[in-house]
Image 1 (cartoon, rainbow over the protein chains, first blue to last red):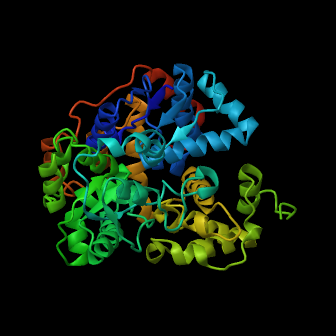
Image 2: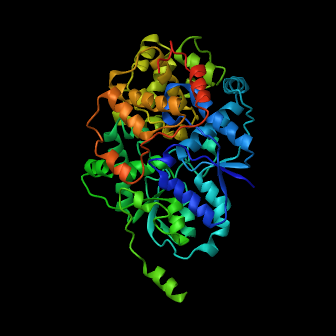
Image 3: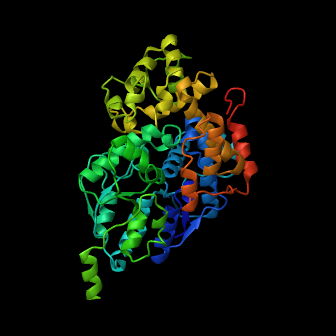
Length: 293
Length: 190
């Protein structure tokens, strides 16, 4: 089984710790991820906001390169890239005329048969089955699993989890010894692409999310999307200003949480790159397990 | 309800023809507007956008292409997720944005948002990827928002989160070609 990885632009820059943690966790478990050669940006929100055909052409090049490389499936940790590539493949497969047109623009072969997985699907399929034996430091914290928009919507195309009250990330957290809380903002929008042009809106939307998580006792918020992370972490001053409160709970990628549970160091997982410091208290249960060993 | 007859050149007719989405299916339950995270920022909430499209009235269509709503929409897909008739409202918003841009009808309040999208795509066009430092600088030049976020860049650099030299793909000519083939300069001045 050859597994391709499409990191996308955020994961090489502002969210590089997400890619670092995906790669280092996979490696620790003996899973090889091969990056799509010479990949380009998927166009993200900007392309589909301004031009329909461009928004299809950019992801199609990536999928064509992945097909060419002979991957059995393509893992896309960024929720926005995952959404764009999945929607593109679906739309072109359902519209042969448009598909032919985009292929002509591209001048490359494109079948439209790639199996595309987000980070959680990859974890479910390839990591969870071999994880229990590897856990050395259970991630024993009360956390809010935050899914946001693009991992679970539109359900008709993504066919992943439930669009309301999703559960898959909660199950992963339980599997590594954590306690996922019940809360109300699991699938609400953080403001995403408005991060720079309308920072005020992001402060309010992301503020509601952080406040509900904290009010219900979460020690951290777990995410699987670089935009969710930037908005909840890097935009924390805007959040605190919008809500009139000071929140100190960190925002952690699901792969970083898994990495901690299998004993990888915070540095390897890129935790030092966060704006909101990750100072999770050492838990007693962790110490007893260590003593027993 | 694909049997519904639309005027050939109304926005609803074009949406039906190009995207196989029938706005006539909407029965105004309002769930889209209720769940929209940015409804308070909008001049017309999603359900009203749908209603205006249904009328196929040129005057209301003109209002829609000039609306702030279509640019404020964050395409979070909540409306689509909750629509009992499964109308792809985000795709309708994409369609309206593209038309608004092509016809030079972008709402003045939305200029900054459009400038950000353009700065983003410019970076992709020239390097194949997004250089976050590049788009922030480009956006500031375009929008004159020089003071916003000035403290953020050094903090990001300290954390290794900004590339000082943009990453470039090898086959940049291919990406440029895709821009050329898909964007008609005259119609869509990106």
